[in-house]
Amino acid sequence: MKKLVVCFYALLSFAVAKAQSLEGAWSTIASNDEGTQVEYVLVLTDGFFSEAIFEKENGKFIGTKGGSYSSSDNALIFLFEFDSNTPEVIGETKTEPYKINNDTLKLGESNWTRVDNGSPGDLNGAWLISGRKRDGEIVKRDTSGPRKTMKILSGTRFQWIAYNTETKEFMGTAGGTYITINGKYTENIGFFSRDDSRVGASLQFGYELKDGDWHHSGSSSKGSPIYEVWSKRTQ
Image 1 (tube, rainbow, N blue to C red):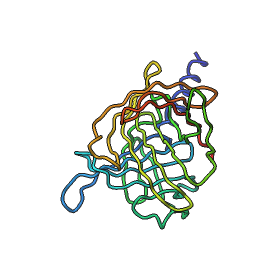
Image 2: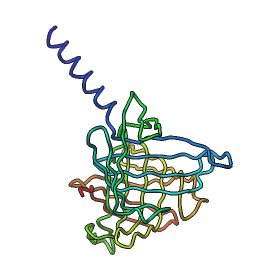
Image 3: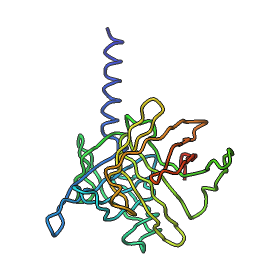
Image 4: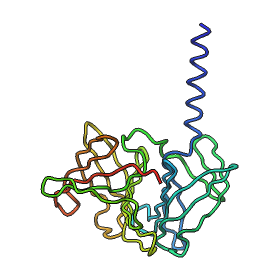
């Protein structure tokens, strides 16, 4: 009986710790000057973050920013790698006090509601494109350069971003929700900086994790065949 009680409290402690974790997706909604509801989605995973801003009703893209983060003394320190609206902040840091109470994150003056804690999707994490299949062969790509294509996923939300940390150029982004079931990865597009008409579309791909890399295959939004390799980001 004593062992059962110990196991119960251990499981309870684990559940509480996970619930209080920053990992996962968070959302907050505000109204702009015209009264339009604007949704902000923040993904925090593996020390990296992205924030997407778009109109809630139609997914019209407004902006995005992100990079890496760390925590210290109940504060988050954000280092910006991309910002579609204010590129001058790239390379700079911003410190925000934070506190988690159940499923609410108070970050600075904003309150965010938890969307997920990094599950149930299989692809939670920050990924950099590291290869493409051409003529039957996988051609590797260097991920250490300033030009990056990153995908960041929580357990239910995804976003890809193309940018250059050296020139501070933002090339594009899209995101929304995703699911992984039986080797199939399905994206439901909630916003797309290059083409608002794609909002609401669903795209299904095959996915497989091989030696820690994510192999992604299927057809692009334009119908072209693709086979990509994504590697977990470590720095």
